[in-house]
Length: 105
Figure 1 (cartoon, helix red, strand yellow):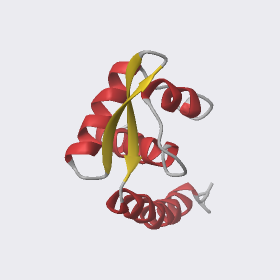
Figure 2 (cartoon, rainbow, N blue to C red; figure 1 turned 30 degrees about the vertical axis):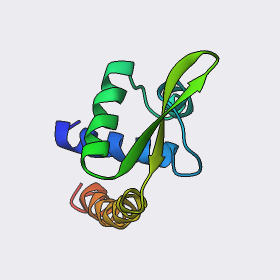
Figure 3 (cartoon, rainbow, N blue to C red; figure 1 turned 45 degrees about the horizontal axis):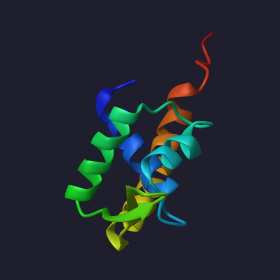
Figure 4 (cartoon, one colour; figure 1 turned 180 degrees about the horizontal axis):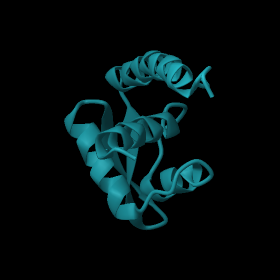
């Protein structure tokens, strides 16, 4: 898969994982596991990129005596998910065109 495409898909998957409620790294990986394999190092790179882009915010909270970072999707992050859905409709239309059987075969 093209690296840029995969990067964009990972970004949207992570945003979707925190769309309903704030979450933290391990839980995000667990929530995404049925859909996409994501290492801890890759996740934290994605989270930092999304934070710098203003698509999520981070807060630190104590949990069982340890500090844990919680990620919250911003309005811009929600907008990115909607943009992705619109873009994906176009990608699917192109896929259907490309996948048509050649009538000469």
